[in-house]
Image 1 (cartoon, rainbow, N blue to C red):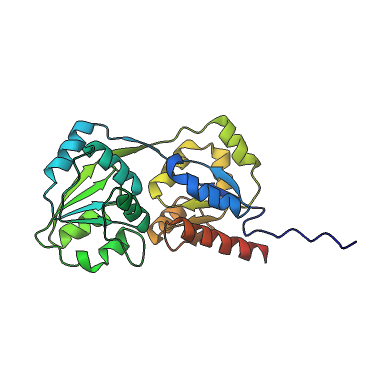
Image 2: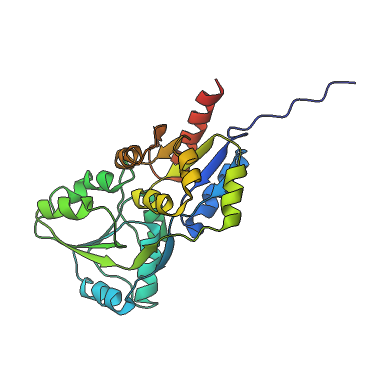
Length: 264
């Protein structure tokens, strides 16, 4: 009788993947990670909620309907913006821009085509695009949440544009249950954290117990941009690795490469 074949080892078998995205936007990434063999630990670092004052947010959108461009900073910004505008009242700026392919995809699902970076999927990548090379005299709406990076607004103002921030939603600190903490502590190591927001890291450091933080800082962390890598280092993390972008595929590719090196 022939020996039973050895089971095929999957790319992330034996590791835990810590996903810090808000619950609604983490589902697809979690499914893909489990398919690669990872033990998935979901630590949503923010709760996404409607704008603190929806009337002010809606008025801001209406005032910017004739703008030269609307820039959306996340898929959540797209969802909350269109919810505020309501059916039958589509946005009417001259052009739509997105900081990455995921945000552009969310706009496409709303029937809107948007330009997005051809290289780095980030605010910096968008600023490198030809469409924003010389926006002198433009009026631009940034559709976002409070607390985001100032890179887009400051750079575009420096290039001669008038920039108006419209906060269509808000990010709040998470509620992490005791059960979730126990699950994390039992999760197999290495813990490979996927991080695409400095604010998410700050929220978790302000929420997690000190003993968990001490262990977490020793584990590998994947950051989607140089800015987030620098922030994680300043927060006491040492084993930091880059991802090409915040897209699911790029984060998982970085995790696979990291674990392959770990196994060598």
